[in-house]
Length: 208
View: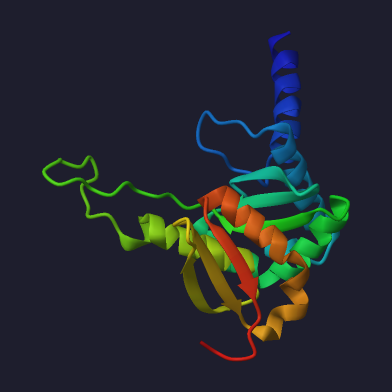
């Protein structure tokens, strides 16, 4: 009976491993049903498309479905060290995922961690000095770059309204206009959700 139970457990575990093999969560944190569906979609693409070699070594950290102005958007969080590898196949990968998820917009963002600003005369639990890449400003800028890819940010301006609120105007390279223009509202909505800042995107005929 013990051997039978062990064999059954192994089969069950292997099925679970298969379904979540494209998602790696922190210890003790289990992927939810939606994250498993994204993981499964990536696994299917790995097994049944020419993206197999590129996807084999890649995994995601999490996924979230949000709704903005009646449109559903899927935010996929990937490990920072794997971001460049994802970007090599991102245009094709997003196209395939959007087919699988009924045309919902898909965006990829690296999962970064913000370290708090050290307070004067307070001993920090972090032994090393806070790296710039972990500051709020750096992480928010990096998220903006992630969202716009493959379009490159060529300029940025912050406009202060009369009520004191800020609006960030981001100028994108016109070379990628046809690839990302239909998603600019999605980029703005996702950035507002992740960073709490308002941003609009433009394709200027001139360089700042």
